[in-house]
Length: 198
Image 1 (cartoon, helix red, strand yellow):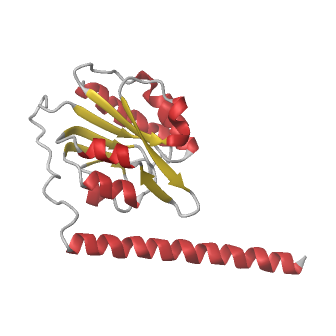
Image 2: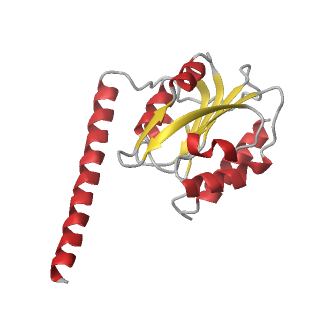
């Protein structure tokens, strides 16, 4: 019994050390990207006087995790689709059959063991070929290094995400859920903003 408790405690400490190592690695990567100028700084001002934007593409990145994906699907079921806009959806290939919505669907894969996201090559190529997005919306409530680098490489008037430790580097509009810690509230704010822009 004592041996089992010691092993569980040892495993828990090992997992915490790996998580701390990964967090430090992300901080180092972001520091060097910022130092080398790879993280764009010039696209974080919003002109609130603009009513309509000339470009017509909106990219919505659906959450990696199952629970967050289900909440997002529930909240965005009543998204008002403006047929003058081109909607692009990037989602985990596991959920491709669960999405019945108008627009272009692109895929990524999530490797839970490494906590890594890989955007499919074809999806990456097609999305990167779009010159300017009206909005890019990341619905992940956790930081994913690969998504943030991808978003950073795209041009968009609005880059929208949920507030996290690194969101200031990548999004010019952030929605905070820390007070209530209810993901649905953050998604409702984003959905309301989207519907008001249509």
